[in-house]
Image (cartoon, rainbow, N blue to C red):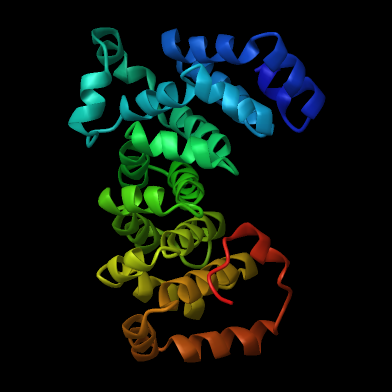
Amino acid sequence: MALAHLARGNVLVCKEIAAAKGILVIIRCIEIGHHHAVLTQACLALGALALHPNNKTQIAEVNGINVLIKLLAASQPGITSELKSCQTATDKNHDSRVGESVQEAALVACTNVVNSSESNRQLLAELGGVAPIVACVLFAHSGVPVRNASQAIANIAYRSDYTIAKCMMERADVAICAAIGAADLVCEDRLLEAAFRALANLALDEASQTGLAASDAMVWCVRGLYKCSYVHVLRAAAHATAAIAYRCRSNKARFAQLGALAACVRVVNDFGTGSLEHTELYSSAVH
C-alpha cells in the first residue's frame, strides 16, 4: 500500500523504486501472494509505477505483463487453452485469491503498462492477454471491472493493426457492445466513455470497420448520441461513430439509416460545438 501511494503521481519516487529493484519485488508479490488485499495493492503499485515511461520497459523485461495476464485469467471461466497450459499446479490451486478488487487493480496495471507503449501492446497480445480482459468485460459482476477492462481494450487497440486484429479475434467488439447494453445510459458515464473509446480505437483499422458493422456497435453509438447526457460520453460516442464510418461507404449508409445525423444534430443543438481538446485521447480517425 505504501509503495502504491508513494509512486502515484511522483516521477522521482517511481525512478527510485525502480532503481531499487522495487518492480521485481512487486511482481514477485503478485506471483506468490495468497491474500486478495496484498494482490490488490501490489497491482495498484505496479500500475502507478507503469505511468513512468522507463518503467514500462522494465516491467515487460521482468515478466510483469505475463504475470498480470495469468492473474486475470485465474478467475475467468472462459480463458483459452493456451493460457490454461501456462498455469502451474500452484496457480490453479489459487484461483479463489482473485476477487473483483484484484481484477480492478490488475486491469489498471495492464492499462497503464500498454499506454503509449507499442512494444508492450504487441507483447500483451502475443502472450494471449486479450482473452482474459475480454472475459472481464463479459463476466464481471460490477461496473468498475467492466470499465477498467474496456479502458484496457481501448489502450491495447490504439494505433496498432496487429492488436486490433487480436481484439477482434477475441470478439472484444461484441463484449463491449454487451457492456454498453447492460449499462445505464444516463448514469454510468465513466463505463460508457471507456466502452465508446474502445470501439473508436478498434475501428481505426479498415478491416475491423467491416467487422464492427456485423456487431451492434453502430446501433449503440447512435443510441448513445441520442440518450447520453454527459459531454465526455457524447464525445467518445461521436468519435466512435466517425471512426466506424471512416472510409466505409456501407457503414456511412447504415449510420444514416439508424439516424446518426439527427443524433449528431441533437448533440450540437444541445451542447454547441465545444472544444477539440478531448481529441488528444484518441488516434485520429478523420482528416
